[in-house]
Length: 632
Image 1 (cartoon, helix red, strand yellow):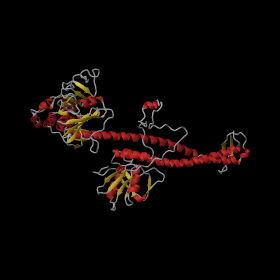
Image 2 (image 1 turned 180 degrees about the horizontal axis):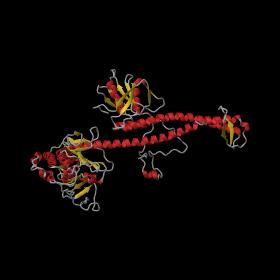
Image 3 (image 1 turned 135 degrees about the vertical axis):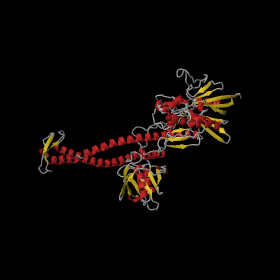
């Protein structure tokens, strides 16, 4: 969620505690709208991340150094010239506003002491970074805003800096004199006592109180027991008193500076946090506390970045799978049509045999002839089409030739259709793996398998970066040797390289532990399925797979112990979870086959992961993962 004014107050104090009197060593740009300031204190380095990207505008401390953009913005050069090497002597900003003033003191080129202020305005789409001289005049800004965009605030070099307009909302500090009375419920906060606005309570609080965010306003209403969308004018006196007490308790915590930073999750089972906040919230079902607000913000945006990377890989794989499925469907229809054409082989042979029997009765240049079908009991007459340009004997040979071609076409089509069935099952397996993909390890495993089959996703630029684009558009005469290789002359073809099967890393296996301590392993891709079933598993281990549907190979490692019915049920539930029959992520009732690993065999010539098995039993289980067990 965006940083609000309440969290900004806590964060300013936290930054001041950590960074005051630190020397600014380096400044560099890490993304299109983000930079990193490396500070030095005796014995340690400290890193300050500042992002003015509207999607993730934030300021936080993190020791992990990010990468650098190749082309740094001009504003970064201004910072290096003016404040690199200077000492941070102050961190402040307007109360309950998302503005951070970093005040630096250093010497200029002639040795005089100068002060500069780096202002970070963290305000969503209006976020900006401004470098000020000691007299409040703008030296430079990351985003220049002239009068055509904003007549009230010009953010341009040599203009006086004007702070963003005040919101004119109530500040919680105005109620600190009688705070105990409000907390006990002896009095109702004045602005609540007679409020009869026709708007939901949380939106009313958001519009009245400085620094409040939507999630904090919603949480206060939740603590007060107010229903969602309950309007202020509909509140009873007791409800107003309850809301006042909850608000006063928050004011009390703010006055004491009692922050409890945490990440909050929309659903208890979610792995990616929905929000971060500086105060404890009860409106969410699960949360994780952090030692500092900076560490919570860093963890939040790291999760968000990982989720974006994961979605990028997911879209990449999904695009490739759809392309492969479309190609497979087209090829399948072609082979199916060949099989239908091949089914006419016996018809062509019948025409040839009957025409051969009465070849001397066929008139020249006839377009058809009636012949008795002596292969049937009542010898019906059938009409045989003829090519008038051919002689009767040539027509006979033509039909025998069609018979041989159709018969061969049917034979080939049958073999191709069998391969198509294997490929369809392979693609379905990959789709299941993609549907269950929830980590970068899953994505890398699928990409690895696609690459092993020569089907790695494309889309990246294949242009040789060593060749200037102008040289490609207008080559001219090369002045010296380069890495560029001219294309081969037409007619010369090189033999295509067979895709190599890459090895499967340990990360390609998921591992779970049953309630009785048995290890259960699941393949992240079909290469890993093969490796798990035929390389890692022992003959006395049990192999599981959802019945008659795509899914991951699952192996229950016996390790010389007697496998219990409980362990079998839990392993079957894991196999069901990682199958196409589990559409909801948990809870589906499915049939799962299981047998000793020694009863599982590869299908010769089929794609990885496709097997047959025998002497199996079937369990009817609910798809779910063991509790308190890691997938990684």
